[in-house]
Amino acid sequence: MSLFKYIDIKPLGDDRGDLISLEANQNIPFSIKRVYYIFNTEQLASRGFHAHKKLKQVAFCIKGQCNFILDDGSEREVALLDSPNKGILIEQMLWREMHDFSHDCILMIVASEHYDESDYLRDYDHFIKEVNLDKG
Image 1 (tube, rainbow, N blue to C red):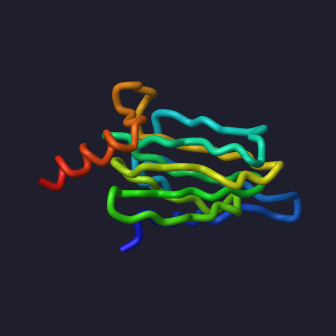
Image 2: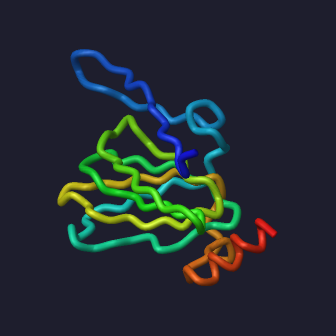
Image 3: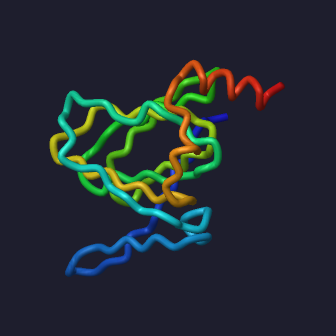
């Protein structure tokens, strides 16, 4: 079983161009409480390096591309984001890292909760301990 699920959003458009509509509890499988985007990231930079205890997210590269590494404490998988109509669902308790940003990458994230620093696990060893507690 994969650590992530791609979410394909059907673009709406005509000869003028395309439009993507994100709808809570429709094509996004949760209520959306926060949206943010990352841009002007140096190509050799890496970001993320954390997990969330409760937060769920869907990530989209609305321009350019990047790689996500997702880790559940026992497996690691790489997910390529390279299309504005393809996102990845990132469930809670998954370590995430973002790498290999294209020079024009704009990464947009929709989140199930408002920002809450106490929901973050920013130390990988601590994340592994929490995952093992959940399994035990």
